[in-house]
Length: 355
Image (cartoon, rainbow, N blue to C red; front, side):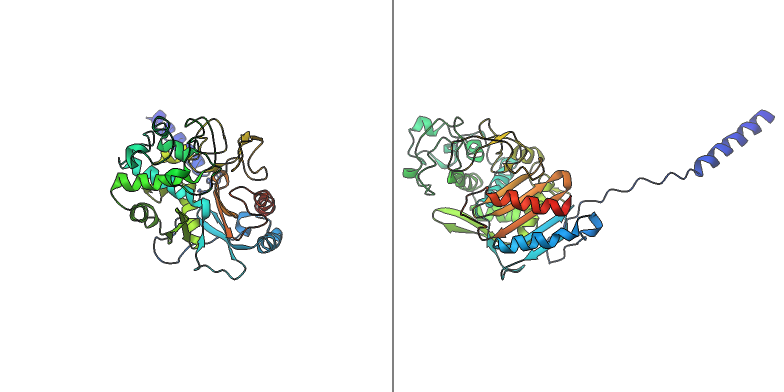
């Protein structure tokens, strides 16, 4: 009996000592924030709360103003840290995405595949019929939807933006040559034919409206260009940061999105499914067959993937820092189709703030 009492006392003493442990609790990681689907509410946080170098924000804003920007937004973990409008622009005015909108097409293609309407490994002619190019039929039938996503269709990229059959001419077998080409837009025809809906209707229902974006597709020289307000671009960037998930809704299959932001072929290592990828050992640029050694944007984080549009429309997604950064505006310097010197200098200015 005495032994039992002694054990109980020792146990009580041990529990008491354990309860007196003053080890501080582990901080709870901040949950990813998603703004409401409707309305203008969007939570914010301050640069000071993140320990950023606020003294360098003025230089960043001056640079963006001088380089003809219209808008610039930084999200951290989904919340707005910076939101600036320049040169007469404001939060309600739309602006064009240019080729940054290619990533919208990539995303909706993944949704259509998940729903069983198409398979990206199938040839394009399975969905829109033969004769959509002027290539010999055997060569045309080599071109898959994945080739359009990866920019290695083998079609001639030197003939301009026209994507009529007469202008889509054979240069090399699909998969053997990377070239930046607006033939990707045929994926919108594939989705429309496969789903039995118009491209716009399917896009609006399956992507735009599900994450609270605004905007519309406008015809331009046989292509389709997206226009929206700046926050809509930021919303899409937030979806991308979360691998296609919005709150508890997996809008784009996670494995598809991860493939989309991974090297898609062995020629241009810095290209996924219409996404540009930083941190690779080499890259190719539009209108060139040259390989450039080094990373796409050396001053930016190596894990960044981005949507790059003509005349410096930008969506930068940086998972390691939980950042989404968007820039809309007129061309910063000389006309460009995707990457420009502006990216490198802008990232030096951004890094001076966030690091």
